Length: 132
Image 1 (cartoon, one colour):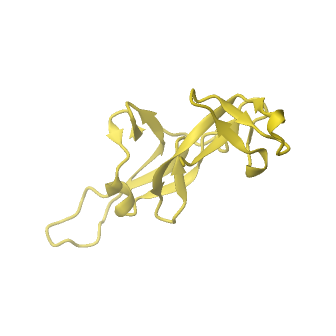
Image 2 (cartoon, helix red, strand yellow; image 1 turned 60 degrees about the horizontal axis):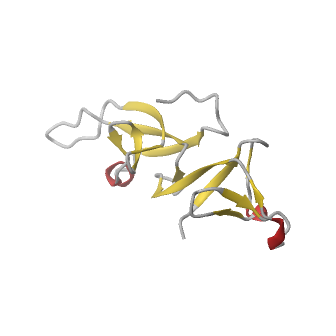
Protein backbone atom coordinates (compact mmCIF):
# COMPACT_ATOMS: atom_id res chain seq x y z
CA UNK A 1 0.00 0.00 0.00
CA UNK A 2 1.23 3.50 -0.83
CA UNK A 3 1.36 5.80 2.20
CA UNK A 4 -0.01 9.33 1.95
CA UNK A 5 -1.57 12.16 3.92
CA UNK A 6 -4.53 14.14 2.61
CA UNK A 7 -5.26 17.88 2.95
CA UNK A 8 -8.97 18.76 2.71
CA UNK A 9 -8.97 21.88 0.51
CA UNK A 10 -12.52 22.87 1.42
CA UNK A 11 -12.25 22.57 5.21
CA UNK A 12 -8.54 23.50 5.38
CA UNK A 13 -7.52 20.56 7.56
CA UNK A 14 -5.77 17.18 7.41
CA UNK A 15 -8.07 14.23 7.06
CA UNK A 16 -7.48 11.72 9.81
CA UNK A 17 -7.71 7.95 10.02
CA UNK A 18 -11.24 8.48 11.32
CA UNK A 19 -12.36 9.68 7.87
CA UNK A 20 -10.74 6.74 6.05
CA UNK A 21 -9.48 8.30 2.81
CA UNK A 22 -9.56 6.12 -0.30
CA UNK A 23 -8.24 6.79 -3.79
CA UNK A 24 -9.82 5.24 -6.87
CA UNK A 25 -7.85 4.17 -9.94
CA UNK A 26 -8.10 7.72 -11.35
CA UNK A 27 -6.67 9.35 -8.21
CA UNK A 28 -10.05 10.72 -7.07
CA UNK A 29 -10.34 10.80 -3.28
CA UNK A 30 -13.30 9.60 -1.26
CA UNK A 31 -13.92 9.42 2.46
CA UNK A 32 -15.97 6.96 4.45
CA UNK A 33 -17.05 9.24 7.32
CA UNK A 34 -18.96 6.83 9.54
CA UNK A 35 -17.57 3.48 8.45
CA UNK A 36 -20.66 2.77 6.32
CA UNK A 37 -19.76 1.84 2.75
CA UNK A 38 -22.91 3.42 1.33
CA UNK A 39 -21.77 6.81 2.70
CA UNK A 40 -18.73 7.29 0.42
CA UNK A 41 -18.26 11.00 -0.19
CA UNK A 42 -16.05 12.54 -2.89
CA UNK A 43 -13.67 15.14 -1.43
CA UNK A 44 -11.36 17.75 -2.93
CA UNK A 45 -7.97 16.99 -1.41
CA UNK A 46 -4.30 17.40 -2.09
CA UNK A 47 -2.74 13.97 -1.74
CA UNK A 48 0.78 14.19 -0.33
CA UNK A 49 2.57 10.91 -0.96
CA UNK A 50 5.35 9.74 1.34
CA UNK A 51 8.80 9.96 -0.27
CA UNK A 52 9.93 6.81 1.52
CA UNK A 53 12.47 8.92 3.42
CA UNK A 54 12.75 10.38 6.89
CA UNK A 55 14.76 13.37 8.10
CA UNK A 56 17.68 13.29 10.52
CA UNK A 57 15.19 13.04 13.41
CA UNK A 58 13.19 10.17 11.92
CA UNK A 59 10.24 12.34 10.78
CA UNK A 60 8.58 11.13 7.57
CA UNK A 61 8.95 13.38 4.54
CA UNK A 62 5.92 13.83 2.27
CA UNK A 63 5.26 15.93 -0.82
CA UNK A 64 4.73 19.46 0.48
CA UNK A 65 6.96 18.97 3.52
CA UNK A 66 9.18 21.98 4.18
CA UNK A 67 12.75 20.96 4.91
CA UNK A 68 15.94 22.69 5.92
CA UNK A 69 18.93 21.53 3.89
CA UNK A 70 22.30 22.25 5.49
CA UNK A 71 25.40 21.72 3.36
CA UNK A 72 29.10 22.20 3.93
CA UNK A 73 31.21 23.31 1.00
CA UNK A 74 34.42 23.97 2.90
CA UNK A 75 35.73 20.57 4.00
CA UNK A 76 39.49 20.57 3.89
CA UNK A 77 42.03 17.90 2.97
CA UNK A 78 42.53 16.93 6.64
CA UNK A 79 38.81 16.14 6.90
CA UNK A 80 38.44 18.49 9.86
CA UNK A 81 35.09 19.56 11.20
CA UNK A 82 33.31 21.89 8.77
CA UNK A 83 33.74 25.58 9.44
CA UNK A 84 31.00 27.13 7.28
CA UNK A 85 27.56 25.88 6.40
CA UNK A 86 25.02 26.89 3.83
CA UNK A 87 21.36 26.50 4.79
CA UNK A 88 18.43 26.56 2.38
CA UNK A 89 14.70 26.00 2.88
CA UNK A 90 12.81 23.89 0.32
CA UNK A 91 9.37 22.39 -0.14
CA UNK A 92 9.40 18.81 -1.40
CA UNK A 93 7.85 18.71 -4.87
CA UNK A 94 7.11 16.01 -7.42
CA UNK A 95 8.61 16.60 -10.90
CA UNK A 96 8.96 14.23 -13.83
CA UNK A 97 8.31 11.08 -11.81
CA UNK A 98 10.59 11.91 -8.87
CA UNK A 99 10.55 13.81 -5.61
CA UNK A 100 12.73 16.91 -5.69
CA UNK A 101 13.90 19.81 -3.54
CA UNK A 102 13.74 22.04 -6.59
CA UNK A 103 13.13 21.42 -10.27
CA UNK A 104 16.72 20.37 -10.92
CA UNK A 105 17.71 19.15 -7.46
CA UNK A 106 16.54 15.52 -6.97
CA UNK A 107 15.69 14.48 -3.44
CA UNK A 108 18.04 11.54 -2.97
CA UNK A 109 19.48 9.24 -0.36
CA UNK A 110 22.68 11.27 0.01
CA UNK A 111 20.90 14.16 1.70
CA UNK A 112 19.18 11.85 4.15
CA UNK A 113 22.21 9.65 4.87
CA UNK A 114 24.41 12.67 5.57
CA UNK A 115 21.86 13.88 8.15
CA UNK A 116 21.53 17.28 6.56
CA UNK A 117 17.76 17.29 5.94
CA UNK A 118 15.45 18.42 8.74
CA UNK A 119 11.65 18.75 8.58
CA UNK A 120 10.55 22.21 9.72
CA UNK A 121 6.91 22.22 8.59
CA UNK A 122 4.45 21.66 5.78
CA UNK A 123 3.14 24.05 3.12
CA UNK A 124 -0.39 23.79 4.54
CA UNK A 125 0.45 24.00 8.25
CA UNK A 126 3.13 26.68 7.90
CA UNK A 127 2.33 29.05 5.01
CA UNK A 128 4.45 31.73 6.70
CA UNK A 129 7.69 29.81 6.07
CA UNK A 130 9.44 31.06 2.94
CA UNK A 131 10.91 28.30 0.79
CA UNK A 132 12.25 27.67 -2.69
